Length: 396
Ligand SMILES: Cc1cc2nc3c(=O)[nH]c(=O)nc-3n(C[C@H](O)[C@H](O)[C@H](O)COP(=O)(O)OP(=O)(O)OC[C@H]3O[C@@H](n4cnc5c(N)ncnc54)[C@H](O)[C@@H]3O)c2cc1C
Image 1 (cartoon, rainbow, N blue to C red):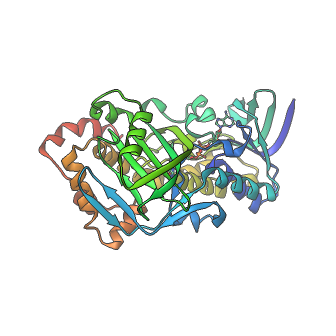
Image 2: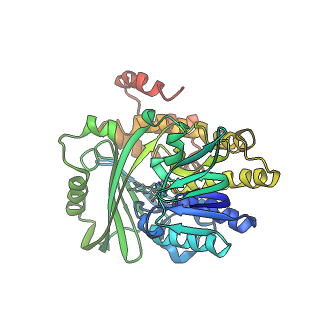
Image 3: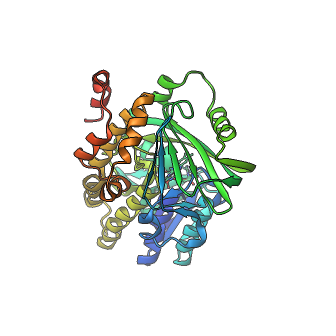
């Protein structure tokens, strides 16, 4: 069977849905979104922590916001700093459902339970996708399949092997949490080679652990699973009382340095499918949606001109690399050091964050730290010189 649209979007996470929402709201093109899961709400991997750039910048409906807070707390093994950074916690499945409704209300056809298996390539250009039982053609195809990057991987658009891999797992629980702030804890005893978090919500809160595999291997004293670490933190911290675990969210992340190929003839890639995720803290909703908006701006012009060649679509890639790519590369270097800190450095890093002015905290939240900020945050040790070869690989 064969169907045809102007635009075919593979994947219904925040990035694919936002791309479809932009096209639906701004054009009359026939847009179809193919999501492998039976429902958009089945993608419940994410904690949904986010910031004003998402809530205000994408007009997110308050009904899908579980909680908000004016402070972020950074903790080390012994240090603790409360930072004035406004933040929000999304009900992630409800958020996806809402994005889908927004897109559908503007004519986008959302087709769930449809797994994309690969691109259709003719004369070197992508002209649609194969699903398990259909060929779906499009003048433009979008890969938004998340970290599996179903199309970008087959097209060889970025080097997944060079990417840094991590995992995260959290419980959404009811009970009481004696804090109004979003807490990030850098402490190898709780999350070896990563960080742990607790995000407040109205009636429920979210407690999670994540790590970068390379650093976990170096800092974990044992081979306990992420589930064991998460349960251990959940049970031992007396700031909360857990009545019931309502949901488990978990998933993997691959972060490259994000100077990636984002456009091919007939195709653009957005979100985690092309490693848009911020490599320092693993925040992916905001950059995924931002990549979708940038791609949509270029796609609308390309479709209007009847030219979806790579030459035309590469304007999106250039914009991403100019606005985010170099920043992300720097953040990855900082992450390489942060997750390898010893306990004393973790505490020193946390204490330094507490010395930041409001303008500095705003730069931290926007991932726009200056070299002076980074030097202030970074608790250098002579032994860190041995890390330089590992850090240098991110410069290419
Ligand atoms: C445990 C955990 C916690 C996280 N917490 C946060 C957080 O608090 N804040 C934050 O900003 N980010 C967080 N992230 C990262 C964030 O969730 C992702 O970066 C973000 O969801 C990426 O959006 P996306 O649309 O690119 O991909 P995804 O959300 O992965 O969506 C991709 C979609 O494509 C579908 N799909 C995959 N393959 C196919 C196929 N072959 N055919 C059709 N459909 C397909 C998937 O089912 C999925 O629905 C977290 C990640 C994890 C793992």
